[in-house]
Image (tube, rainbow, N blue to C red; front, side, top):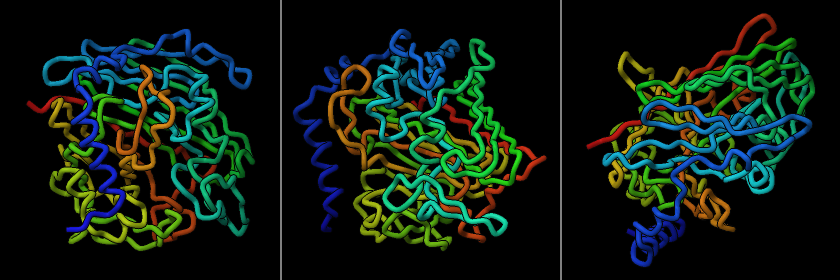
Amino acid sequence: MRLPAYCIACLLLLLTSTANGNPAKLARTMKMQMPEPGAYEMVVKGKKVGLFVLRNNKVQLGITNLGARIVSLIVPDRNGTATDIVLGFDSVATYLKKDKQYFGATVGRFANRIARGKFTLDGVAYQLDVNNGPNALHGGREGFFNQPWTVDTLTQQYISLTYISRDGEQGYPGTLNTRMSYRLTNENAVEISYYATTDKKTIINLTNHAFYNLNGAGTSTIVDHIININASAFTPIDSTSIPTGEIRSVSGTAFDLRVPVNLGDRLQQQDEQLQIAKGFDHNFVLDRQPSGGYAARVVAPKTGITLTVNTTEPGMQFYDGHKLNPGDRDGKGGVAYPALSGFCLETQHYPDAPNHPNFPSTILEPGTRFFSRTIYTFGTDR
């Protein structure tokens, strides 16, 4: 079978890192502890930002209030070795200068893309900040990811943060009061909750944009990961990554991840949608999660680390990180993050939903409250 060019490049990258790189040496180059707190102490847009660490007896979760983002997540592998599985940077200054990928950030007011940055609400046309080709992405250039949030509550295993998005910010109507929280449970789960109210009819779609590598951030690609997404359908995209409006069955396509599959093997399939996006960067229409069910599960055979996702959201963007660029060695511990070195599972409402009446609504009315919760649970597969 002839492989697409992007698959060949990815496999060559993996083979090169295995043949020429010493895995033990690579692991030693990684900083398996939190970034230095002083590197996160900075004034951004007149507000102090810093590093806040949640802990239980096995896991450490590093948060900065710049973009209410995850900067580090240290979990044990099957041998009990502390492993940082989240891509990111060692300082706030680097996030401000280098982050083009929304590493670990809370993204909004509207996560994912809106076609041409346009939508209509009650007959009024709105123009958003266009920052991704012809489209609006993740709230615009000054979206939630780029704002200093206010820390309201902080305990050993819980942090809540707030942000007020003013009427007209990045083109969105209404003043939106948003509160989100991270809770680290004793079961090694990271519970992310979002709440919001508005004084004017608006649209909202919030998610977390952490990149995970269950082998350890910066140590390898993720093509060996085993992935399972409980979704019977997905939303196909056009050449600008905007949904066509179709909700397509995954049956007989590369997007049928209802049983665990090897990511590298699946990327080799000849699929028109994989060709358009040059990999996975699509919204999956999640099946309803029964009691004890989950939206997605990922396993790294090398480390045994597992990630299980549960969510209240109807969709999830699976992005395989194929657009990551090694660039300078600016990652934590001075490493690079090349293509396919991290994946995202962004729980959400569907992209471009305001322009597709058949998609679940993203409208928030005054007098009502937006709520969303996603739980990422980490363990080991022995």
